[in-house]
Length: 127
Picture: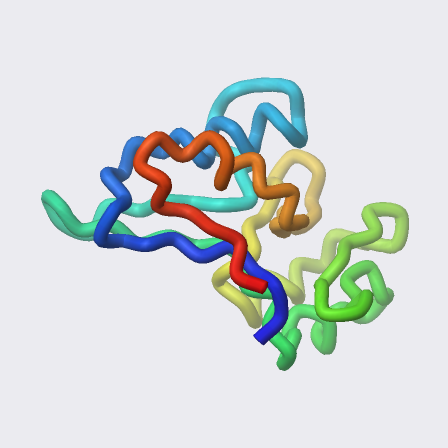
């Protein structure tokens, strides 16, 4: 499996610090809308984390008609200049998120800031 972010849901408290850190690191603002990682509450104490796994199948890459999403080594990378905003990538993968304002996908770039800032140490980079 390629390097990716993994969340231990037994340790995750659903505080969503990872989302805030992600948005601030990439956008310079706070607010979860443009986060590349999302923590969803499924029950009172049950959470689900969604973040790109940079999977080998890379259905998002195959779906992208312009090459805006591509594989570079074991990572999936995004080139905003090539993106036409068709949304095909997010239609085939629920681990990518859509930026409505910019009309482009939001994909984890493995910066690992969420890993360093998680108060519960529930997030790690798997290599």
